[in-house]
Amino acid sequence: MIGVLGASGAVGRAAVRELRALGHTGLRLGGRTASALCAVAEENAVGHDETVWADADATDGLRAFTEDCDIVLNCVGPTYRLRATVASAALAAGAHCVDVAGDDPAAEDLLKGGDPARDDRTVVLSAGALPGLSSLLPRWLAGQGLDGATALTAHCGGLETCSPTVAHDLMLSLSSGGADGAAYGEALAAVRGGRRVSRALRADEDTTHEAFPGRVAVQPYLSGESERLAGDLGLDRLDWYNVHPGPAVRTLLNLLPGRLAAGDDRAELAQRLILAADLDLAGRKPYYVMDFALSGTASGAPATAGLTLRAASSYRLTAAVGALAVDAVLRGKVPAGVHFACDVLNPDRVVRHLRDHGVADLRLTGAAAGAHQVEEGVL
Image (cartoon, rainbow, N blue to C red; front, side, top):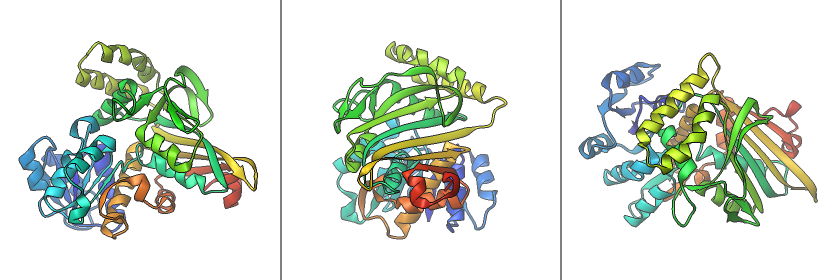
């Protein structure tokens, strides 16, 4: 049985649809609101789904939810607070676990408690859009027409509703430190000469980028995932920007670092972010973009390869990656132990799924478009 925790949330509801599309039925849907869970269970159901009250903050409820599950897909957060709580409960119940977030702190907690591989259990962390797809797509792009990659520039963001989990993670990206202190990453840092360099980049509160309509704010941020990506691809240079198109969110982002430093209540600040995102979205169509520009060589000459992903929602992107990770674990494609999704999922299969199931539009440029011989660079 597959248990989906947070099944009535933005990611969880989409994950249920993705799992059903992959042929998985008879799911256990967990959450804190019975009526919302029942609505998910009845939505396009192709088999009997079980609904169970479950709260990641309630030990007894979490234990009851994970019992008899073969695998648990965790779609709740925020990451900084839950860390490995859900994964640990799943392992204690003898189940595998996929977490759409998780990140380095969860991996550290799990490995301190003993390697799950000894019990033939698998945990896949960071199985979402960002982190997750944010590393899978550059890895895939690196194999499309380039002999070797040396530099990557990424711009990721969009105009959509802001969940409490996203709000808290966004605040982390504005305030956390580097690898020796905080676990999530470092604002304004970049990779230079193959290593992390603090304050290498600057934020721009009012600029443009060809992949995004209108004016945007760009904020440099080097996450642990991006730093590992640079090492895995052998990159000399990596610049990563989080993009914020909405004016209300942009205005609030200017104030947040000072408010966080002053010790303002994070829950109240998160609510302000949620309201600002709703204001920006009023009367506009939501979208999410991931744009990558990779430099390297092709046939011995300097070359570039580009990939722009456009989707209606980052939440569906996260759900798709999480569902694919669950499917891969159940099919025995992921070894026992603790892994990050970008290290164990097949990038080709992920890209095909996004394209064939209408999750996102992917457009290739430069050497990548030539390698695929796709008219006008559309994949």
